[in-house]
Amino acid sequence: MKKRLSWQAMLDLYDIFLFDAYGVLVHGSGPIDGAAQVLTKLNEAGRPWKVVTNDASKRPDIAAAKYRRWGLPVDSEQIVSSGSLLPAWIVGQGLDGQRAALLGPSGCEDWLMEAGCEVVPVVSDTWDFLVICDESGFDFLAGMDAALSEIFARVDVGRPVDVVVPNPDLIYTQAPGRFGFAAGTMAEMLRQALTLRYAEHQCRFHFLGKPYVPIFDRALSDQGAKRPLMFGDQLQTDILGAHRAGIDSVWVGSGVLSDLDRLMGEKVQPTWWLPSLAGL
Figure 1 (cartoon, one colour):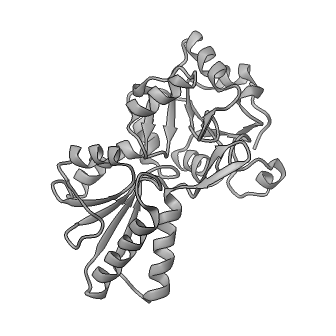
Figure 2: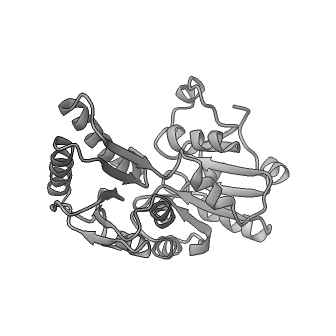
């Protein structure tokens, strides 16, 4: 890790800016100090930027409307979410037109139907694959119990199971000093349960968002940028993902990890650091 990022260094060294949403721009109940000002200054400077988020609970147009209500100048075209990767992934895996069970808000069905899938209840033996988009929008305990039982039933008879998880995040910031579990924790619960019951199984988990590279490829595919910079608060997703994608990163201390000393001991290091976007 180098040193604290300055506004001038940011503009001199990079030509497009990628911002994580939760923990950098917003938390679950509003904007984070400095976010609106930084985005507005970038717009005034004519510099391109995007929001690259693991949030798969809502479509980019819904997310953008919410951010604008909070005072952030975000258009839907500027948001690349892990959920938006679902249709192309489903088609690429040859799962288009099949039956999908969904854990998450009903709005996430749009991505599945875009790939020609029929959405069926989790409490069913008819689904072909399971999609975990978010921890909200359904009866969590009943839904997870049903998913666990259906997965076990398939593994017991030697059927392969595909579980798609757009959002690998384990936790996120709900508000200053308040945190919540994210969809990645749901996948981890199922993985641990499978490990307890089976020595071997054919349940495959597919993760789409950060720290995996495809979401960065999508964000930069239409930009022609040569020197991107990623702002993130989570080492295991934002910073590691940027490292894997071969781009520089800024750790921002307004989210899940706020201890700079602990950050210094990690194997994967950001290029820069900031206490928050208000520090620019």
